[in-house]
Image (cartoon, rainbow, N blue to C red; front, side, top):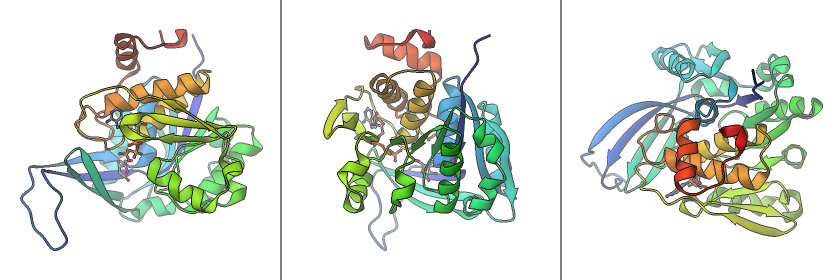
Length: 302
Ligand code: ATP
Ligand code: RIB
């Protein structure tokens, strides 16, 4: 049987509290919404589910609260094929994201709760798990010290690292130099460029640009990999779907451009349904979609 590459995701696990409304409220205003839904979310969990649904072997490292949300999410992650043996319950509330979806766009208030327990010492206790991976994927909804420790362990063991710098914060140079692929959205890249030089970002920067696709920056030049045209319902988790797809494709040996094309297809399909994880496609769905678009599909996906 074909050996599956191991993808390890270190990151946040949230319950998303989603309100759908025709328009977002102004400050101090009360509006009637149209629909409310609770969905498992969190950038770490989303990226883990995206890759697992595509067929990757994925383990997630993170923390949930000792509460109902935590139990429900862990059960759901398991159903999606994510290895949760390194997701630990802690004495805190599970992370939440209060999301308003209005007019094909979303705004989010994030409360980390248990995600704040993913510290440097917590990650140190997972050293062997990280060291046995083929690729490590992280975001910034956990403490930066946890991210730094995980990246340090990955580098000591020659493991490729994808960092999705969201929500954006200042990144120390010694962290940045150990990142192989950095995947901000357009807003995040503006802030990133404010405190990091172009040279530091060159060769690792992949900017996601919503309906325009992604731009890979190499040797001072940007190459655009266009998005697929699709009827969008909810873009929540589109970036996470792209990152999960990118990790899966890279771990299977695709070159960066083809891996981004694949990530674009995963992300496009994810926007056709409500919810971050609930809208993510399977590997077979991505393959059918790419074929229907006359897109390249690498033989390892067939
Ligand atoms: P989010 O925070 O909503 O998860 P993001 O801001 O991190 O998303 P975006 O750059 O908006 O990320 O989108 C990520 C990827 O999703 C894009 O690069 C593209 O591949 C896909 N995508 C997003 N919006 C669309 C769209 N309207 N049509 C097609 N593909 C899209
Ligand atoms: O990227 C989308 C995710 O970010 C949501 O699932 C939510 O949990 C937020 O933190």
